[in-house]
Image (cartoon, rainbow, N blue to C red; front, side):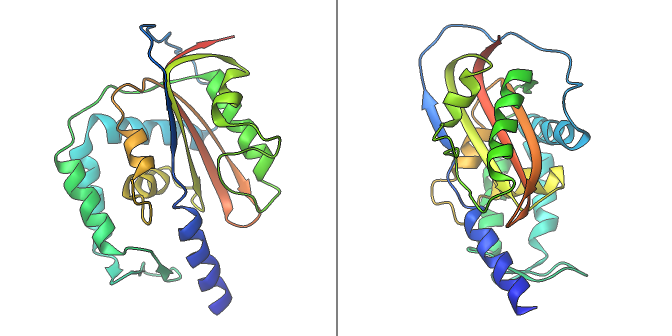
Length: 222
């Protein structure tokens, strides 16, 4: 039990990796892609949850209000689950709720096959290792990877969650952004300029699950 508890504490620390954003000015409008048969059920669910969080932030505030009741200090105490020691505890959840209550509705994101391929590249580079973060084992950055499959402009960002295989928990964790001082993952989700999204979910040696989310203002598939 102690070992599992320690692993979960480490997971929360790694889940606090900052999101990165690279801004570039552009007047190009995004090209929409209507088909997403290349995505798994979980990956489609993650996009649906992101769009729910963007278009109805008040609904996500309600989710987090219920979630906050599971905390005792810094401990997340879910019935039937191992207690997780978080960095900030309930205070981070309540801060996220206040943010969501004041957040305006944003346009939904459209799935991108090329960006999802880039996310898959990152999953494959990390899934059999203990590595975390945004630099690939080939030293690629996230904007290098999305450039392999298309042309992005405006701005782009990458969020990575480690440890969850539930779409709602993945998105909730990124919005709460426990332990991340600048709330970089949350800022990426609620960047009004982002209109395209790519997602890939897979395994991870240390944290069991991982989910990579690529975001961009504009993206044209190759």
